[in-house]
Image (tube, rainbow, N blue to C red):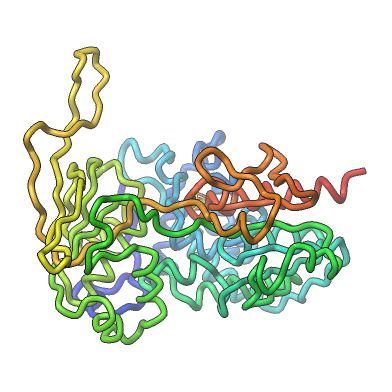
Length: 454
Ligand code: SF4
């Protein structure tokens, strides 16, 4: 059986605006999809979800149209259901047993429906007043917001410090409105404020605020949720050419200049018509979809096969419908430039699966003599990111892993600094949103263990 459709802007309309593409299920379709769930006694979807949300439990409550109770069931595990309901990679759906014979249950869309509709009904709740030890959380991306939520729910007095003027970190600046509107982030933040969490913006740890300042202000523990260090400049030869952009920079510029795309066109793309986006994750797909909305032809180039890329199938389908050209099994080797040092193409070779030793171990390999130039007058690099090196200067005493990420003790999430913990992308590179939330939950549990256990 197939999933029922969600409300969605037509492809003709949506490529002309920057508004959220999908509006989610209607009530009838949400209830219909909830009834399709087989309510497995040993649900593999729950094990596949990094937060182990009681998926059959919330779907059961949704079937009964008890949306607030369904939302509370999700929030037992997930700090940010409204955000996960839109942008989670949904490993739960990949595990769903119905996938063998048709569409998996649309768990992500049901989670979204519950958070959109359960929230409005539970708006009368009172703001929580916490009295436990004060804890500082540095960073207000998914990991920071989630850590604050979990701690506040355990009665800690939590303050989140954010260096930018607005809260949300990568959620706000790195995911476009077409998938995650600012108003959804604002509602998630408001919800966390209701848990008693305080926020201080324009506070950069190590500059306007040191760790010692935090101790002096009475904080008893700190969770660093500072994210990654942005694009990896060494990722491909030729990255210095004119017309080459990094996905983080591009997404942030579009996010802050939207809804006036002329600004971004002038600033970045004045003469360009064809953009090659190198990469296969959500960032790459988002960049390609925004390029289309800026009136460019957008091609997504990546070495994997189409069915191996780590994006949600509905986002991939939406991008294809809008006109993103998918160029799988193609490995970018080098950017090529004109005499004026402007990018004019990407030297690539073709990839294919081969069994070089004849032992049945098939692997992805370059096809001999398959090099060709993919012509493009702008390139967006969405293939790699580097560790957040700044944090080591800003917070003396931290140590790094071999790959340069923030080191924490396994299981306890402790850095070498006493009472300082860490969570999120800073530990291992870019995680899916749900991975960042799961890491934050571990860090919050570790703080709780330090303070609340005898
Ligand atoms: S958080 Fe993600 S993986 Fe977990 S139930 Fe929701 S959509 Fe599935």
